[in-house]
Length: 323
Image (tube, rainbow, N blue to C red; front, top):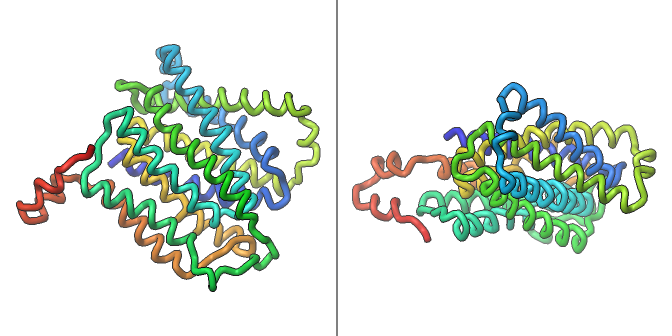
């Protein structure tokens, strides 16, 4: 239950983060957003390590753990976040959601192959609903889809779907690297320390790219309004990743990742509050929210508790595990 709640908190803050980034890239660039949000994670995770004792975990980490956590940071915070920001910039926060849902099956398939995780009929149903729910909120009937938003924004579908797919693969693969970095004995304290390692590696990656591409001159043109929203996003994504790393330490990938995919639901809510003139919305979002929340509930239920509420003949089927 704790892992599910942490994953839900991660989804909520990540959804708010996406709405904030969307607001920022209206006047700022994706590279500026990366330069603000990624380095912010280092001091924030360092501060989180101090009261929880995460610094001691850093000393216990093996070279292999440092490698896997660093790789997770580069894959997720550099490649995945850049793809997410580019897709959001091209499509808006809401339209970029469907293609990024591919990260869920990618994560779970990799976990089943490399970590020997299993699924049962209940969790599989929940997984499908969580993945399908946000898609319902984004895929709209063509005759209802306006060509542009109230503010005049016209989505660039080719660019947005390409970078959304890149983001989905990166976000889908990174949980596997986090789990390998934590190892079988990793706990909540180790997960916080692992987040710090990941952000350190990602920050070095961002700085290296910036230096190789001409330096920091582009930051001089950072719009004040965009800078404010990028800073807010940096704080929000820190909490999102903190909850994410902690959830992966105490819950199976199939549960943590599936619930974290509820972020598009929260993204729609916060987008309505912050960016309603710059996004596409449909009445069908209510159905998507309901399906997603029901799927999340199924993922958190205990099999034995559910089996006790149903006829005894259902128990063997409910306890079936794949693969």
